[in-house]
Image (cartoon, rainbow, N blue to C red; front, side, top):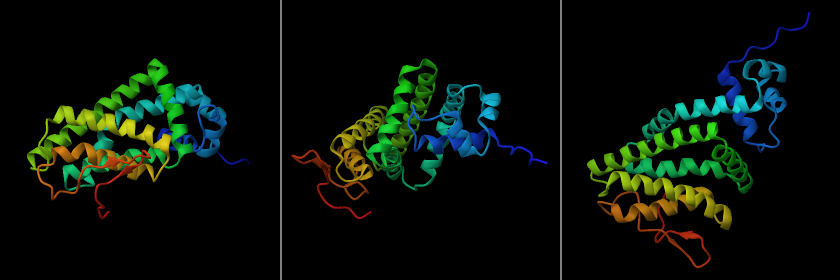
Length: 219
């Protein structure tokens, strides 16, 4: 008697999809690859989700819907709201663990921007992220860590992190985490209520385009 098919939850499938996406670009990703990762058959995925697009859309809708919760989890790692803002930069650097990894993520972002259904998820996630950043900035102002207008600075941080990923992929110097952190530190520095906080002097870009901190900081 053949063994009964393994039952997996949608969350199991989504986790398997994430793992497959971490090593395969959109053109390489197939239901068969996801099924192998999840330990099920491709036919089972077709019965449950329909097509690869439908599966990815279900995954992205779940991700967008839980964006607020994910930001809350990130905030809970830090006692200081200013440290949480810097932690957000480090978290986003995970998208660029290598140039190849970032190019894969950029390819998926192209789908998010081109397909209206995927873009709706992207906008929902982005709004939740910006709202959380705004809350953290306001919290840092209330705690005496920053002296800034929360909405404007939150938008600036969001924008700088996105742009910093692109410039890191262009220059490919140091790690993405150090590169992005230097750019975020440069943004935060003028708004520091005290120079004794975790953010040092503004980072600067040398003539070769690499971000260099004005002084070394222990990590």
